[in-house]
Length: 408
Image 1 (cartoon, rainbow, N blue to C red):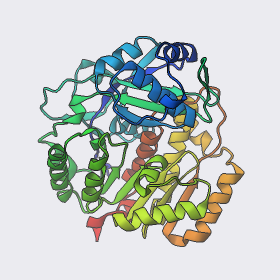
Image 2: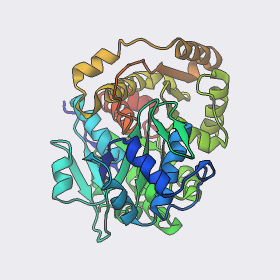
Image 3: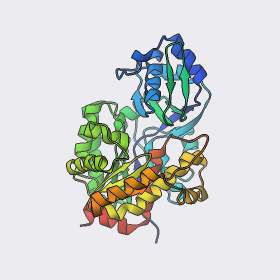
């Protein structure tokens, strides 16, 4: 018996992954006269100076994130100063690539399609796309290594850990057109991923897409699993609207540790079991979903009445993301198997044990193993985790039935 299809939405982008170069970035910082007081800005990014200051602010805190740039030419000019590679990004596309490593094909819902996108899609991946005339521009992806140092006459910054930053100006995703074939595709799917809505910029546009997504979910199979992956919304007030609408419809609500801190409105100590349990309990109670998932660099966890059922999916997601971290986009099935047996930091082990004691049966947690590599990949780790999680769910009807709202 063949596995029912998997549908992953929404959007995609051509990514320009620039190579970290402290010399070039330092020259830009000096040229623009950037000092310590410029690094904490959260205002609009309109100029190259704003962009460089934003990058250095993330570097100073060892943080990652996603920001919108007002003028796409700023991104183009900046990218031209660096070497790099071109790839196809977006949660749905990178998740599809991860699933393919486990033998699971998927259909992705794109925001646009052209010859370059077709060439970059994982082989055998189907696609849906709505009618749109909106332009699209490459996303800037910059990842910096742990210990990366940038020095100027006014700055001396050292990255506490490796991370990645994303900068975009993408009208095609900001006003993504949904395919008229979405309802039919979701109706036959075992898994439906909702993601990528974070690029939308107006409330009417968001509500329109949410209504379409809701109609598709209403037509889903009883044993289908519907999964919402939160993200860094460019318009923060829209994040609450999307969250409030989708959490009453989906089976799994997933977010990163950075997004968890945004939702609870405070920093969360990722190795303090009591602090993490308090934060995820607040979010899970407000969301009311069967399962809340949080993924971080230390662990991935699930909270809810059906949490224990998704433990294998957590483990597969962690294994695929760790393999990508160590081996990049060329990670093989053998690489995935090898990281499953990699050691775990003692602090992480203590956290997992403590969380199990405090949370009991309503919590499942899988540690992220330690893999030491000279050039880790920090781009697409959350997307890859999602792909691994959903591949396990697609292959296991028992997981879907235990978690799906529609199966009862």
